[in-house]
Amino acid sequence: MWLFSRKKKPRVSTAKYLQARYDAAQTTSENVRHWAMADGLSADASMTPEVRRTLRNRSRYEVANNSYAKGMILTMAGDCIGTGPRLQLQTNEQDNNRQVELDFERWAEKVDLASKLRAMRIAKATDGEAFALLVNNPNLNHEVKLDIRLIEAERVTIPNVKYYPDAVNSVDGVEFDAYGNITYYYVLKNHPGDFSAKLEDFDRVPVDAMIHWFRQERPEQHRGIPEITPALPLFAQLRRYTLAVLAAAETAADFAAVIYTDAPANGEAQPLEAMDVISLEKRMATVLADGWKLGQIKAEQPATSYPEFKREILGEIGRCLQIPVNIVTGDSSRHNYASGRLDHQVYYKALKIEQDHLALVVMDRIFNAWYREYSLERTVRSPEGLHLNQHALKQILQTPDSRLSTNWFWDGQEHVDPAKEANAQGTRITNLMTNLATEYARQGKDWEIELRQIAKERALMQELHLTPNVPEKPPDNGNEEVNNNDDNTQNQ
Image 1 (cartoon, rainbow, N blue to C red):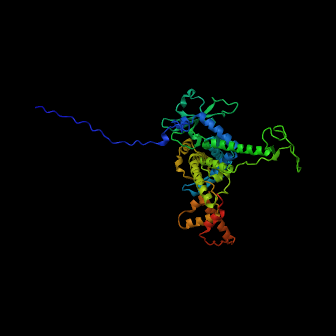
Image 2: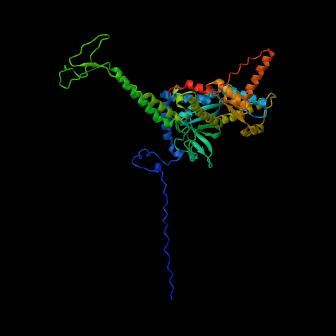
C-alpha cells in the first residue's frame, strides 16, 4: 500500500497594500511647465560662476535703479551695523580690559570699521557674499598697522582650473584640504571688469588672512548668491505695472478733448477728416461742425487697485529679507500700535541672528588678528624698554585666541513709547527677571561703562550739593495699552 502525500498549495495573501502618493510629486499637463526648472544639482553645481555672475549683475542693477530695493538694503545695513560694534573684553584683569577696549575703539575709528562693515552687509545682500582681506597698512595712523581691505566677489575665482594643479580640490577660487577645511583663496590682482585686467595674475591668500561672509542655505555650499534673488522677478513686475499705469495716465492727460458723433457711418453729420486736430482757446466757446459733439477722456488712471497691488508686491519682496511691509514702504499708516510692534519684532529677531553671525564670522576674526599685533606692539614698546627675543615673539603668536572672551554691543532699537519701556524695565529688574547687563545691552551699551559714568555723576553732584529732581510716577492705568491701540487704529 502506497501512501501519497499531497502538497498544499501556497496560500496567497489577499491583503491590499496602501500605496501613498504625494500630489506635489506628480507631473501633469497642468504643472509640467511650473516644475520644468526643478533639478537635483548639488549646491555648488547649481551656483556655478556663470549663474552667480548673472544674479550679481541683475541684483546690482536693480538696487542701483530701484528706490525700494536701494532703501531696503540701506535700511537693513543701517539697522544691522548702525554706528559700529562696541567691544567688551571679559577677562579677570579689569583695568587691562578697559584699556584694550579703548585702544580697539580708537583703531576702529582710524580704519573706518563701521563703514566697511556696512559695505560688507550691503555686498552680502546684493552680491551674495562679502570678502575682506586682513592686510598690513604701514601708512595707518595707529600703532597697530592692521587694516581691512574689501574686495568684490568677482576677484575670488580661478579662471581655468586645469592650469592650476594645486586648485583641483576647489570651488571657484576656494581651495580645501582632504577634510573639507578651507585652506586658500585665489584672488585676482585686478577686477575682471577692468579694461586692463589680466586674469592670469592672482594671489593665493591663506585662509587666516581672508574673511568670507555669506548666508549658507544648503549643506556643502561654499559660495553665496544675492539675498534678494527671489525678489528680482517681482521688482521687474512692479516696474512694468507702474510704467503701464503711468503710460495710461499720460495718454489720457495728453488729449484735452475728443470730437465724436452719434450718427451712423455715411450719415447726416458733416464730414471731417479723421484724427484732425482743432485748437481750443481758453475761456472761449466754440462751434463744432454739424452732427459732432465735444467730450473729454475720463482720467481713470491710476486705477483704484494700483496701491493695493503695489503694497502686496512690496510685502512679498520684503519677505525674502524678513523685512515687514511698513519698513519696506516707510509707511505705517495702515498699522495700529500693536500690529506695528508685532511686525517689528520679527524683523528685530532676524537682525539679532544676523549680528550674532557677524560677530562670530567677522568681528571675532578681526579682533583676534588685531589683538595679536596689539600684544606684540605693547610688549616690544613696553615702558621698561624691553624687547622680546624671537622665542618670546613666537610664544605670543602661537597663543590660542580662545583665551579671549569677547562680547559685542550693537546699537539698540528705539521703542515707540519710551515711558512704557522704562516702566517695563523697572518691573523686570525689580522682579529679578532680568539684569542691568541685559537691559543695557538692549540699548547697545556696556553696563560697566554706564555704571561707572553714573557713579562719577553722582559723586560730582554730591560735591556740588545738587539733588536731582525725581518725577512722580504716573498712575498705572490698566486700559492704557487698549486706549493707545484704539487711538492709533487706522482703516485696514
